Image (cartoon, rainbow, N blue to C red; front, side):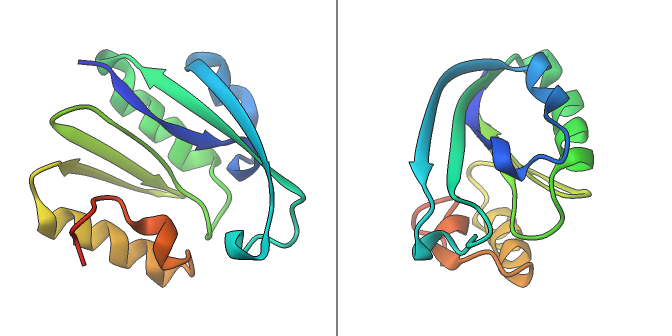
Length: 124
């Protein structure tokens, strides 16, 4: 079962990893105060699809190239949700509120705004 997710191009130190990922669509949005990234003018959001067999390898690559702090990438299927930060990967069973809470708290500890770490609606 393939994974679907989002990667923000500006979050990557090196965009080579995108050569190994199927990009389904791209949306560019201007940065606003709500984004909390005033050093950027825009976010380039790539909707991606990753084959199940490549999910772990891509997570490792992303973890090495994501800018420190403020950023994460994620992708999920019906059962699992990868939430990837710089040097930290959460592989979450989508039915586990405890695992989601751990990933959310980690993101908040990095200074990521709470609305951006709402990985699973209903998890407080």
